[in-house]
Length: 330
Image 1 (cartoon, rainbow, N blue to C red):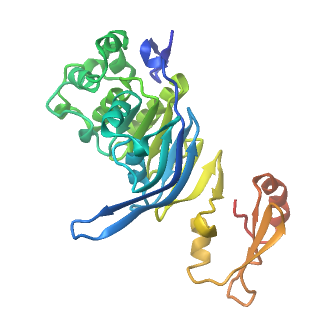
Image 2: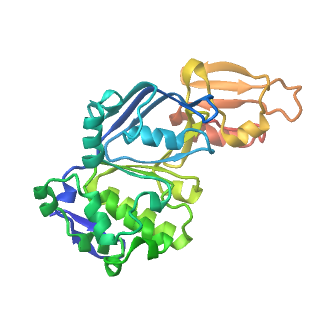
Image 3: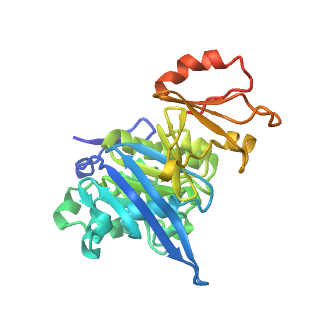
């Protein structure tokens, strides 16, 4: 028997929702362009290489226009990339026909778009919205799936089962959108700003429910957020910069990612100290370590910025800590 934790010390049997587990994601050189109303071509993604393991939970960060939401729609099969390849498990969805993509979207992937009203029928009740989300399931699958009342109880909306969406609060709508998203037992949950415009209490509740889903079902979860408090709850973060993966955070440590032609995005606090146009020198110290420095006659110039292998960081940090002009680039 598979159960789902409501986050309120109550667990419910969710039947066939527990069957799939998570699915892996692999992006290879993904490029995406779109055309504005004025007829200008905009490069939203510039050669994204990314791997997400089955059952992993990842938060995407980055400024507006960095490509986060675009990448999310590509992973969900809503759009196709202009170039490059995207795999869900062993299936390449970037070259898949619309008929098969529709099957992927209805059975294996659920995408929560930004703004709860974009994911729900405003004129329908909570019960009717869950039924609509399950339209693509077979009658046997719907029969085996968790009852709508039990699913709504998990997200704290069992008292609103026959309430029309348009009369619900923002937090209630977002929790209902999450219930609809998981009602088909997806292997991959994609959520674009699921906590935006929510109170702190509703935000924390939605994030708790999302993590419970990962804990109990092993679902792969990818969330786009602008909120550091939300990102901090995820074991891995990916920061998009200029349409590329610029940095990653893993278990509290931050790493820069080397892009095409050796491009490296400095962490924000270093980019402010070393602005565009700064002359730097890069020297190998050993096979797993580089030293990045700028001329000593540059005003307030640091002595050097070591770029090391993750295993070196802890040991070398203590030695470098006494030099106020030296920082680690993880």
